[in-house]
Image (cartoon, rainbow, N blue to C red; front, side, top):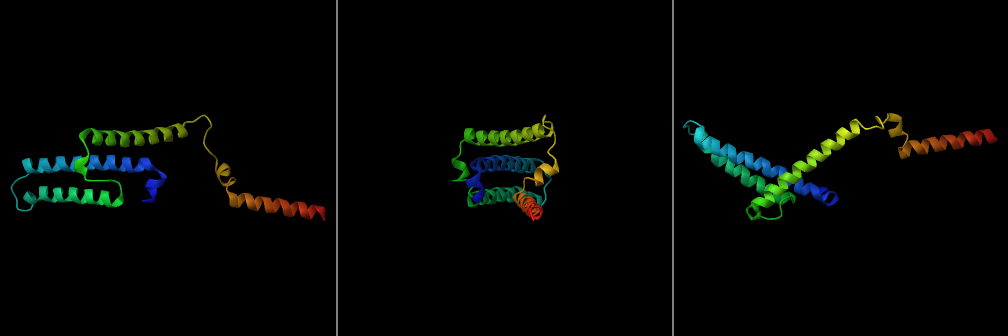
Length: 136
């Protein structure tokens, strides 16, 4: 995917977050096997969750997030991916907080749109026409 070429860490972050989701689904399947009452539909839910996990792994491979089978990743690699994903999210949150309380204050709208190339071109054209009108 194009996103992974512009931000290579994004692939690892998405894989780490997907691993957390997959771990949660596995735990849910285990809980269901032990605690749910006997019922024809409820007894099939763990199979459904296993299929959902397999489909998620296939989707991750097709998107390019996962390079090989998930089973080839060691527990240490999986833990590192999860830790890295949450570190990136924490860093992004900290960056947003620092921007919100920075000493330079809030960025004004005029600072944003006056730096736009289209607006600068219009202002330059306007200034040129005024100078040309004054010269005549």
